[in-house]
Length: 396
Image (cartoon, rainbow, N blue to C red; front, top):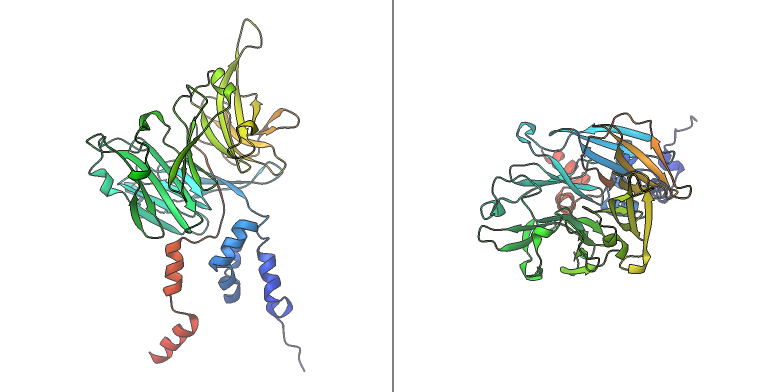
């Protein structure tokens, strides 16, 4: 008798394949979905996607930034500090000729928040292509400053995830034509806008804050335009409790007269960075970048200082061994990628890049994922099964 050719499903148990897939990077799993119906079903399962995002040791940081109004670069880095991949990704705008203000506003769980002009936002997963368009036309008709480009349309904005409700939220704070402040959020689960004016502190001066919010520990964080005092320097909005709070910055930060501080996320920790002028001798001065990292969230004594020997360093993420990866301008209009070796106090230039980062362009960091949006899961639940589709074909 001829031996029957066995497939991989006869050799490896289903549970073992599941375990192996949890260790495969998301970018490879997208291609593996095409191998068989079984693999497609397993990799496309929302529960598997959640497990892979939470526990996979193969998670990869991606840097996304705009090249022009209709394209964005997608750059990935590996442990040897070279770019493993960099490619052009087209944003999910149907009519690219109308997109004249395309910007990346934030990231959350493998999704990025885009602004596409024409009074709408887009939540988009660059890896899977899943996306959802959010209109804020109800705000436009009541907004005070019409014709002003984003981010000045909104005094505060942010993008986050409420794990208690399995809910992605887009946060917007704006001012109407009667000078009244409003605080709204869009729920991707209910596909509706929610008014949160009751949670908004009446004494909060929105004009004094930087609009871009940073997601960490289920909360959005904002910094003021200038730090006049270290106490209550960082504004926090908890997505679960729907409440505001404040935390203090390091005391030394205000004493050093920092200008235009910014927030970053380094190794799951809140970081605050800014250029700092120092005087190595009495005749001249130099610039470096101070990075304060809060090693324990909301523990003031855990602020730790790193001094980068570069005045315009923008930290992006940590490498696997704890070094700080970031960008800095090296020539008049070119931005390079650098890595700061924390143990040796050494800044090294990553030279093997297929392209240069745009000059003065914000670089957004996100983690690749296969996660679907809640609306995608509802569509999957309502979709007929394979047996139902077969039965329909027979009847027809």
